[in-house]
Image (cartoon, rainbow, N blue to C red; front, side, top):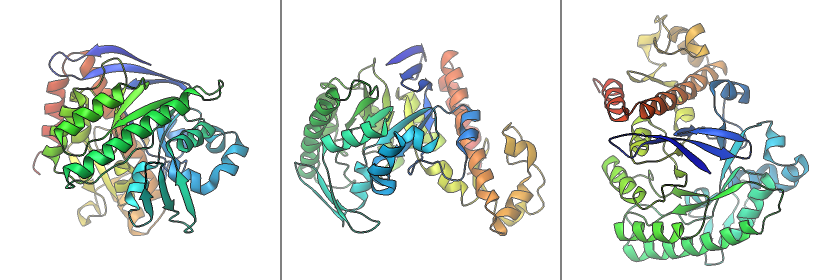
Length: 372
């Protein structure tokens, strides 16, 4: 499923091609998050023009609204949305985890109340796989139990046991899919912040013949050094021949750490969420365009950026759009931020091919965080 084209000489960073039903994806790659079947404040055409070929949708949200009847009638998520490239759909496990007051986890599955209308539902590993098959997801994720930092070892172990059991059930259901459905399924490693449980979870999930493996339960509020420690600890147990995915990271430092650990895919709402509040990436760090100092700054967001936004609009004008609450403001900053992320991954892939990833990472982060 993944063809490794190049490896860095001094780290575990690798460059590859991911083969998926709706086309090839170059890795390492960042996935924009399209929770409800759309990446907020940007047209699919713009994402396609940047080079994106894989975005994320969310099973929990799409299952509740527009609902299965609408999506089945449309013929799946691609037809419904008009995105003609690949979708990875999260199982909804993290969203259910976030609804701690509205859900109950049992060995059977997770019972929860809709945050929209309070209606009651049951997700099982089998039903979540079936839902994603109806979506025609190019990559579907298994249902898992995500746990917060700070819990006791025993509680983390119980969650791990359920996650492994659910993974086996989801994989069995996927093997019984309709022959016309070519989507892949990824298992998810959990284990909280206990190294023995991380190792055990990785070994158990990898013993199931998933086409790809994800690392879950990181970037959930822990300190950056803890994230890095458990990322590298977990990554060492993942099979080399399968694609690796770290869920929920989307800042340059976290992404480059993941690449160094040999990770191929990552996603996060962060680049688009902060864009809607006027915060934008530049090669010299993040800036908030709402700030007064940009009132008469007629230069582009980033002098080194070749995105359509930087070629046409000034910091001053974009600040004006935010101050007057014009919809165009968040649209422009979203386009810039996603272009920045795509270019960062493009530069990363090139650095890996040249055997210079370590230096590229150090130089980029030094420039990005200079003066902070």
